[in-house]
Length: 289
Image 1 (spheres, rainbow, N blue to C red):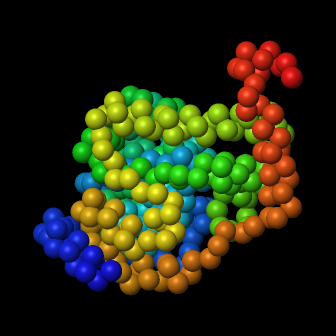
Image 2 (image 1 turned 45 degrees about the vertical axis):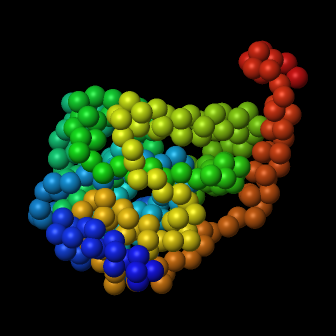
């Protein structure tokens, strides 16, 4: 690893900023991370942009925590309706920050209030891009941005993880719910599966349209090679890693909370989807067995 890191910094050279001070030694969940403790009001306006494109349940929030600790921006789902409202209202913006007549001012607030190492970093799912960034504001955000694509190869486990999160309302390692729980049924599961697959396809289509070749990161990279992963992303963003801050975050890393009863319930529902594997789309749409 020492050889890897030494060669990496030699490649980065003078183009990388000095390490930023880590904002927190604690391990924040999604609700903590959108809170005021991670605001940087009064600091410099971010000149660089890092965009983490990820479908659900790829380990992207764990990556966000690692990047925050390492001094590489303060990534979060800033274009999620819930989280955008939380942040924008705290900064004095009224109304929907994602509405087209507000979003330019909202992005400016983000670049002033959520910057670390000179970088504004955000995590985006395709549905969020589709809802509010298919416009000149999205084009400006992506212009000259460093783009990371987080991908999970085991789609079965990814889907099961997503369904457990949806049914419990818990989307992070902590036991507290960040969104209202949703019902579990075969019909709900099928809709969720189509959504998940559309998310990956939508992101890939976007990369082709942009002619972009994102830095490709897998869930396994985040779990098994966190230091190397943060270093590569920091390199792409032109930032040097705060190694001490990253060490503190890694020392607090714990597995996500498990709910074995819900996991079994969701597994049973997913197993029932096998009945649809060889059913024609015509039969499915007509409701025939």
